[in-house]
Amino acid sequence: MKLLILGSGGMVGSALIREAHKRGYKDILQPSSRELDLTNQKQTHEYLASNTPTQVIVAAAKVGGIHANSTYPADFIYKNLMIAANAIEGSYQAGIRELLFLGSSCIYPKHAPQPMPEGCLLTSDLEPTNEAYAVAKIAGLKLCQYYSSQYGVKYHAAMPTNLYGPGDNYHTENSHVIPAMLRRFHEAKLAGASSVTIWGTGTPRREFLYVDDLASACFHLMAVESPPDWVNVGYGDDVTILELAESVAKVVGYQGSIETDTTKPDGTPRKLMDNSILKSLHWSPTVPLDEGLASAYQCYLKEEKGGNLRDK
Ligand SMILES: NC(=O)c1ccc[n+]([C@@H]2O[C@H](COP(=O)([O-])OP(=O)(O)OC[C@H]3O[C@@H](n4cnc5c(N)ncnc54)[C@H](OP(=O)(O)O)[C@@H]3O)[C@@H](O)[C@H]2O)c1
Image 1 (cartoon, rainbow, N blue to C red):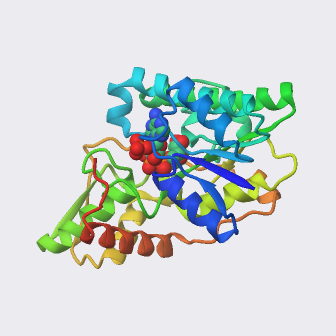
Image 2: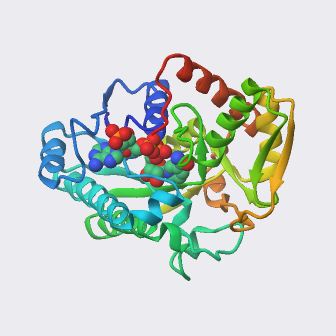
Image 3: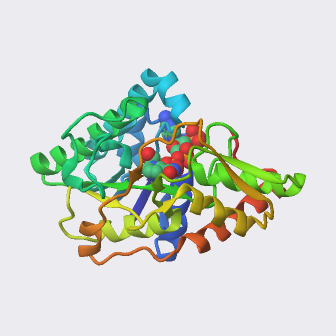
């Protein structure tokens, strides 16, 4: 087995490499974005044709927070469409039979039923702030579905919920909720701040999955003989933002109070994946939130000390 991980330098790609080693893969191709620009069709097709992996995982994407997504929608749709199309068509032309594409829970409609089943895809409007990114990810999963049905290859997709863990991005404005909170509570502890204020009422419910659990789910799915076209990968349970903040404060050792700023928007009240298809395929997560947060915080401290904390 020769495995190619695209996006290997990212949070998900690094977790996939750890998991591949655990599972005994010896031959792992992991080109950086400098070696291989996936928006470049010629380069991507040539790389795939000359390296001929047996399996490909597409964990490369242009990702960003709400601000970046809504300010640069053209970049988000163009780059992510090109990455998906070049990786998938290039793999097919190179004779590669197995490919897993990573999407995101933002592919589902803004007002999807909760928990969100795979079948609610394309049933109503998307969340406008990340529509460009979501449309590109939907195109990616549809490419997999159509290549499989037309050419008989095993191309399929996994749709993860919010992820966190080693190698996360701790940018002060653009990061996701867990890295943002870990950093803010850590800095508040160091500064001896008496309180930390979180946006909104703290009541919205969100789901979080430790990135190593996602990597394990990806390899589990790849081992399924006829996997569904796309499968949700969630933790199966959610917490309120206030509960999350309390857990982060505990893990960090922050002793002050947690305030809510109710003048700030809450966002959608609940966003939870329906995990039942993945469960029926005999996979469940193993890292509870408290344990995952403790491990993520240790990684944050190590990355900060080593001067390699991602915050751009
Ligand atoms: N993080 C989450 O909470 C989350 C949740 C759901 C789904 N996902 C999905 O998981 C996948 C990976 O996300 P992540 O969190 O690991 O993001 P990440 O840490 O930002 O990693 C993305 C990777 O893609 C690479 N990349 C970007 N543009 C490229 C290009 N043109 N050519 C080659 N490589 C390119 C980046 O390389 P450079 O850094 O060198 O640019 C980086 O290694 C994405 O598809 C994302 O939608 C993530």
